[in-house]
Length: 362
Image (cartoon, rainbow, N blue to C red; front, side):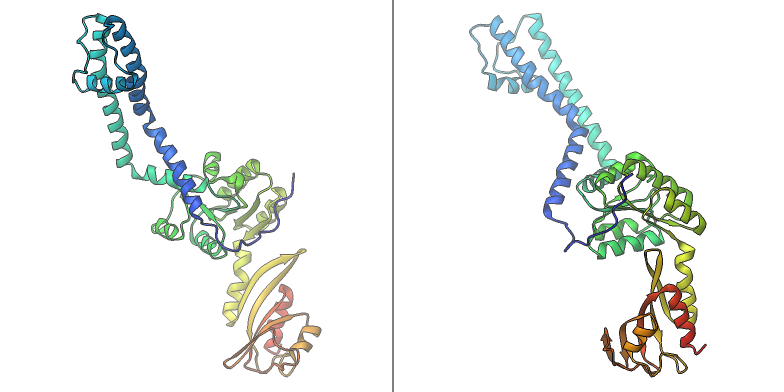
């Protein structure tokens, strides 16, 4: 099995060119044509093909009258609306048959077309869904987000801010979600993301990544199995509540990232309880790294030491230093850290925990 794509190259800008919407509009019109093509094709067949046949038969019966080919469709239309065309009223039974047939054809065409129009007019959600599917079909290298709950909405917003095209799948969207996605111009497919036809509507074959972030582990698992079967190389990220299950799932289905909600939230809650901001961010070569904003305490081991000394001897990277109203990004190595300063540190997660404890003087 080929490995999943491991890197996401952020585009220079979000590719929402006019060409995309023109392509989506064209595909939407094709879908609309499929709804109305039957009565239109019937009308064209009887006015053009049957009109040509009638003209030939009439010319045989009445050699002195030759109706030009270009006028024959109009003559058929006149028969449909019970208006006599510029021809001799025929006495032959096979020609009289056409005079009785054409009004019936008109009734069928008008009735069928009107019923299709009323059906689409009353069922506006069907037309709206068709447009969303048409828009999704024009996307490439987009991210499919399955589940637009509290977590999913934030994932969608972040992907949009990073400049990625997104297609959302949710079978029971929360109130207000459609308006939110409409503002972002993100298509929403209201269907079950575990079904192949739904994933095809989201253009899975051309997608860059699939994010399963519903609140149900079993639903996420079923969706992942279907996605991996349909696209063996796509990058998959899944939200899983059970941490042990998450580790098994990552290896078994060759998933790029399986994120346990409890594992992700624990450092955040613990940090918030201490009045610090700590975020678990990345895992590199099996090692977890975190970013933390820390207020230097009076008894901190960092007080009175330089930035360079701390970075060399304490296995950390100080990326930002704040003192009063002065903020320095990548502060100078000879900068002395004092109590009351605020610094932002990037380091191994286990190292971060030690830094927090020693900052208190423990």
